[in-house]
Image (cartoon, rainbow, N blue to C red; front, side, top):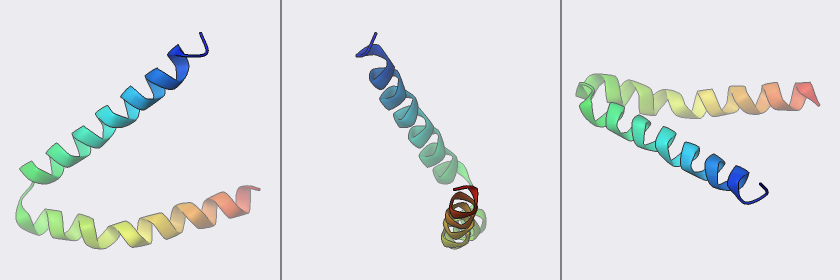
Length: 54
């Protein structure tokens, strides 16, 4: 049981990363640039939300 849960989490994370990479590769170039430019702002928003929650 203790080995299955971390394994499932790792597999799930890898699948999510693969889906994101494939979506970025299939997207139009202007869409990809917009997403990549928005990532720092998105990360900052998540960090602020996480700090407020604690």
